[in-house]
Image (tube, rainbow, N blue to C red):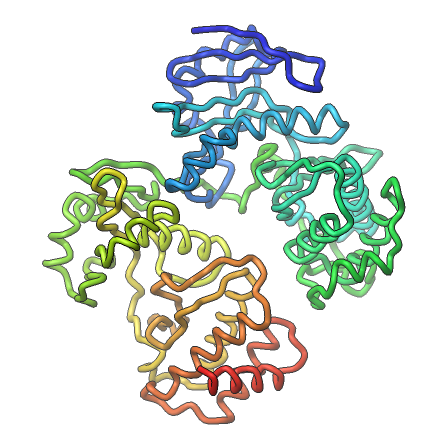
Length: 550
């Protein structure tokens, strides 16, 4: 074990650099003599029980837990673990540092500037031949903190909501004055910590999307605000109050009209049930407050209460699988041990040169074969088709969009080149493709319209939308499958959305049931109503134009 004290640039307190086991750690000077530092030699054990998962559905390659260290005095920490997903992320982390170390230094700079964030305790990374393999970040746990999106959905106190809007505007103005801009302003990345009688304090967490670029230009500030207002989906009247407070809070005040012109058009509909500037939207009685014992740790947003389901690495035979912990059952292990045998013995759904799909026992296994060497080289940077499908399915599941539930994935590689990849998922019970659906036609059109509206609202576009890729289960609910054409763009423009609908319209003549002109009009009316769009006729013309040119 080595111990080296280094000053942190721009900060008065030094940090310690220690080698513990296979990890290089940066440790805050205040905890240099803590008894629990010995546990950092094997930080993977911190992720195991009795650690409490803080994310119900963590992102692929990440794990977030709450750990209590016994000592004098005892300490509660939030531990965030990250592993690179693919060659591109490995190269980026090796070049600019692991996310744990970058967040550690950024949190110290934020605290030195006067911003409220989770106190960084330690950051470690493991390298092999100079390449980053995994990283850890330890921060203080903020008791009683609640993510902003939960407060927006539950709080009915008008004065408190006005205070939150004002605090968020002042925070963004101070960030821009200090040269910071936020590329990932999800409302889960802001924690509210009650501080009576001063009101709520907003803590910045999950700093991966925060960048420091001084000075912030007016165009960059407007882009920051546009991302916040679109992704945060703040109701229109609260949005106006937010921009007014922001423009006054800058060191050099910004004209409100110029700010609105720079931000551009935003969604019209409110997406949260209550608005502080509209008395009629507030309920007569406030809903019950969330349990403070289930509040997420600092720096680590939670998708809701309940146990976590982090994917784990499992080597069976020559394949290293990434499998969801809650779904690792004996039948799943049998398939993972011999995937090719399952493809031959189970019910074959799709035999082809590019992919083989078989189903059995309530599970579906898809094997992606090597089509050409160009795809193999591209997969080095973007990840294999199975890995991308697994990640996309996890994203859809977190957004509540029906799809086949992902179970596991693995890559078969020769050196670094992926030759084959496997994707295991749940089978959709009683699946019937949209083109062969024989149920209520009007109900089917409405369900598909609402599904696609939810998909576009969540920031996804499907470049291969057709009847065979939408399956109805036994309950008549549509599910998206074959996610190779799915792409996450965060904000789906009208042109992209119209292109998706035009591709679906071009496939409609091949369906077994006839889609009349009235059915198409009702479909567009339901789609526009689900997205809060005013003019369905514009969509009719746009789809017709793309169908003719296509």
